Length: 81
Image (cartoon, rainbow, N blue to C red; front, top):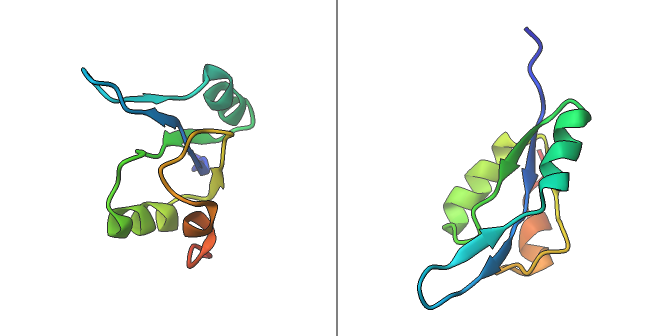
């Protein structure tokens, strides 16, 4: 069995008085699957150490045009495999 690459996706994050929401268009996950990968939605509220550990396990990351709770520099610094 061939191992498929794990591709992280950044969802939009919206605070809401009843329940906060993470939103990601289905076309992103569909595209990753059609290309032969396994989409992994990266939780928007994640501890820095947990995020670093997750990034190390992923084969790639798609930074969607989402409302992020992190600056783009936090996604690139120290994330090389």
